[in-house]
Image 1: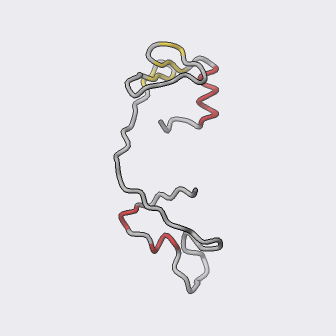
Image 2: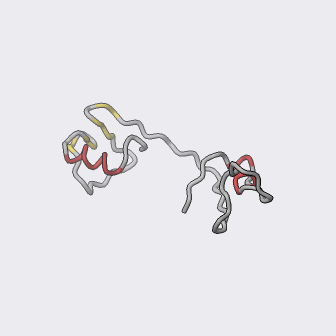
Length: 92
């Protein structure tokens, strides 16, 4: 839910700081959408992710993602994407 890294969350679970539905969490425990997750007794709110569009694009080896410091003849990949694609890019 964006509260911690996976490793940090695992440490919290091992330390008994996480509860799911009132029970102390264990590694590998399944959590459903309706389960209430708490860290040190404080409810962790689930943020709903709005369904939206995903843009996939191919980036050739050596192609700039963002505009380089020195001018080039080619437009950076981010400049060629539609504005509605947003500013967050996840490399895969």
